[in-house]
Image (cartoon, rainbow, N blue to C red):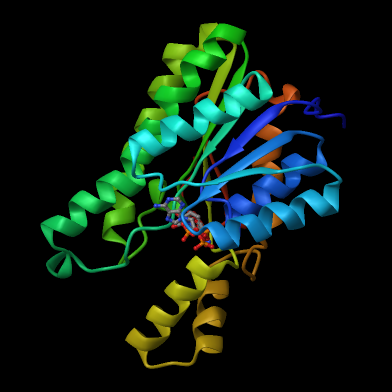
Length: 263
Ligand code: NAP
């Protein structure tokens, strides 16, 4: 299937590793101009070089903290200036800390609002008017299966990602007539550094080994295993493509069947 992505300009936030990196790699393979950001310049530069080398194209990168609206604005402006437009934007950030309710301070709550909810708003504010002008755009928010089925112990994530799903659905209504689709994608248990953190936490809480914790997680999934980041990135790439032109306002999980609800 020709996804029609060749030459499209794609921003992927929080993409030096994990799910963001996997999405950036797929966009590069499909012939997009790719721009990535994360906080740590050294990792980001290495990732951009690796993706660039593998796909014979330069990958634009800037060290940006997605909780800083001015930094997000400057990044989007720079990408727009360099490539002349923004077609695709995948919003993403590191996960908020995994804590139980009584251990979460008000500062934790405020920081998580910035990281998990407002970072999506910062990007949406910058990219949507640009996409509107070109009458074409794809905005994708990365959240979690927790928007469909809350995950025990991930209170900040469970609470704030539901807000992101609400944001994406409402933006889809507001910008649908402008040739823009907005969809929300929900990773299940996917083998990245973030998952490693959760595995360690679960192992510690239950007094079991890391391997046993992974076995227990895998047993919750009908597929019987955890996901690879590229399995998630395949959906992101499709939703960003020309071929997904009538998929709008959805929340789709890539979870091997983990969510037990019907929708
Ligand atoms: P990861 O492997 O830990 O990668 C996180 C990426 O985000 C890194 O590139 C990191 O680079 C960047 N980042 C973190 N905070 C940032 C900030 N404030 N500004 C800019 N970049 C930032 O995580 P992942 O597994 O890819 O997860 C991505 C998102 O999906 C997270 O929100 C996670 O909670 C969620 N999720 C993951 C899973 C899973 O199983 N992996 C499941 C459900 C949901 P720097 O540290 O250098 O900034």
